[in-house]
Length: 130
Image (cartoon, rainbow, N blue to C red; front, side, top):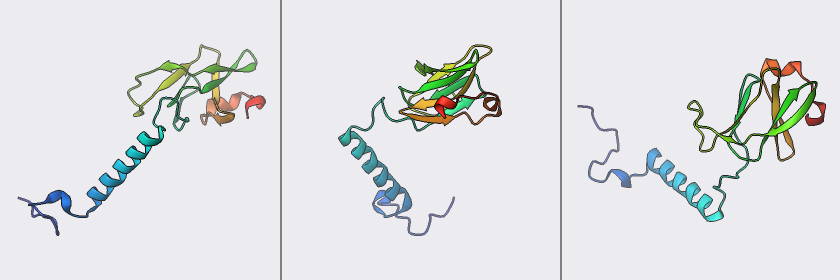
């Protein structure tokens, strides 16, 4: 049997001031503030983006658009398909895929362009969005 950690109180485990209890309290405070101010909603700002080559992009909020190079021009298309992509651990996941011959060169959200960091995107120029 392992020895208890120094300062461990078997009778009253959660009353001790330790790292775990401090983090629990801080987390509860942040969640409470989000609930009170209403910032925890489906229309929050895009904070996560995942590019899968130049064929798919996923974001964590509605309202973003994929900047796509197609037929010698760049167009914006909504990223609005809900996804349950298993390799992304986000609360909300919206994705956009493109057809053969098209490439996702970035994401446009609220007046800001987020470039696709993959090498395949370097083959396309979309000056109106950069």
